[in-house]
Every structure is written in C-alpha cells, then in structure tokens.
Length: 348
Image (cartoon, rainbow, N blue to C red; front, side, top):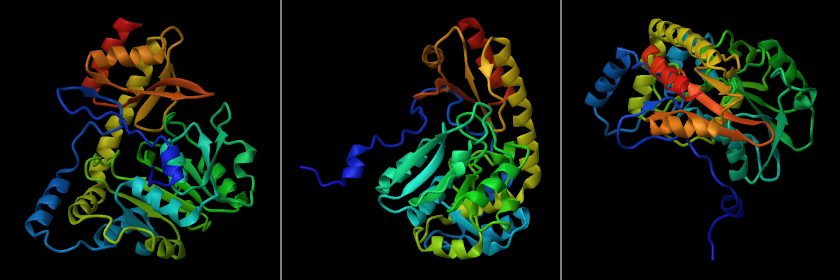
C-alpha cells in the first residue's frame, strides 16, 4: 500500500551533481566558483552570527533587496529573495501552473524544470532548440493550457544564449509569463533585467551560487513587476532565507569590484579550457557560462567521465535522449584546468 501521490511515485526525481563525501577530488561537475567569495561576505556572516540567532530573520530580506535594487537599477519591491534560485523556480511554478496545465521549456535544458511540473501534477512540454541554438517559432505558440515558460539563458548544459532582442519578441507573442533563468548570466555578454519593465510577462531569476561563489550559502532572487511579486509572496515559505544567508548575500552583491575581477578570471580561463579541449580533438560549443559542453568523435563521453573519475577528477556526464550525450565541464582555476587537460591528453 502506498500513501503518496501518484505523481510523486511515477517520477524519478532530480539528481544533483555528485558531491564527494570523502577524499580529495578535482571537482568540475557542478559549476561552482573555484575562488573563495568576497572577504566582506565572511565578515558579514560573522557579524550576523555574533548579533544572535534567537530571532526570526526579516521575511523579505530587505537589506539584500535594498542593495540589489541599487546594483540592478530597479525598485526594491521588484525583487523577491529565495533559498537559492531553485527556490525561486519552485515558487513561480507553484504560483502559475496548476494540475493538468502546461509548462514549456526548451530542449535540452535544466532537468529540474520538468521535475517541478511533475510535482504540481502538471504537464511539461519540451521544444527543441534549432541547430544554431535559437528558438523555433513554435516556442512562442499559444496554447489554452500554457501557463508558464522557462528559458535558461545562458542555457545549461550547452552554455549557449538566446539574444535579448529575441527574448523580447518571444514575450510579446506568449500568452503567459516567461521566466528567464539567468543563473550564469554574470559570465555572459548581456542580460534581460531591463526587459522586465517593458513587459509584465518577463521575469528574471538569478543565483549567487555561481558568480558570487556562494553555492554553499543558498541564495537567489527574482526580478519581476511588483504586482507579480506581491502574489508570489503568498507562495513562498514565511522565512525562506535565514539571517546568515541574507547578511552574506547582501555583502556579496555590495562588492561589485570583487565580482568584476572574479568573473574576468573565469571568462579568461573558459577561453583557455575551450581552446585546450579543441586542441585535443573535442567539439566544444561556444559558452557564455562558467562551463563548457564538449564531445569527442573518437571517445565515448561516458568512458572519459569514468576514467577521469578514477583519477579523482569529477566532470558531469549528461545524456539527453534524441540529442546527444557529452561532458559538461565547469571552469576551474588555471591550475585545475591545466591538470584536467593533461589527463585528457593522455586519454585521447
């Protein structure tokens, strides 16, 4: 006998990237930042802890909202804080998509999206990217049960990007909200925050896990017009961000000099990594994120993944039925990149 909802029993569940529990690994599988966060973050967390944790945190994270508003150039009430951007994605899905309704997403993309639809008892529809990684016209097609569209930009696992103008045109045709998931956008050449004011259907989600080196802190946020934020507040957990994460996130977004320096280093190493892989015969998609997607014509991706793991190097092997399997490799430090390329050279 089962006590669980049929939707839950039928789904496989999202599987995060491997987190080794023992021993030393070169970890390039979950798109973490290879550099420590701004020193201001540690100081802010220490101060928040010293002030005491016996009281609940600010339920809206207004200290962060105020500083983020300055950085982003939007009013405070256009920002919603979350326990990582996955929390934001969950809130938005719960708010807009009901049982039997439809969530649309591109293919291939972030696997969690379909999991969120399944948890709602909703339907999810994948529309395949064009060969040049643009979106086909059917991605903007209306449907009576279509309630939400997710668009990761830059995309995972490919690192490719849809232009801001294309997203603006897409939102003008869609009959429902469009969430642009900008988890990796600080490594890219452009972003869509300015579009939020131009079209109420456009929302932008961000995370501090990647570019701000705070994957262990769990903090993300949404930018949307305030009448949408007001409804989404009803869905979030009362205190979805704790006092330490609010303090750390506020200090992080305040240190834009640190961000520019760190992103610059990662973008430079991304170029070195892509060129090094290409020199070893890999096919590498041009990336706007802090990872690259690659395949090799003569060596199975799963075999390379397993051999690297034997050498205590973790990359992400991913298999997308009907498209391809391959390796998604996070951009590490220059030293980590050199070590990876040296191992791959001996394998291929």
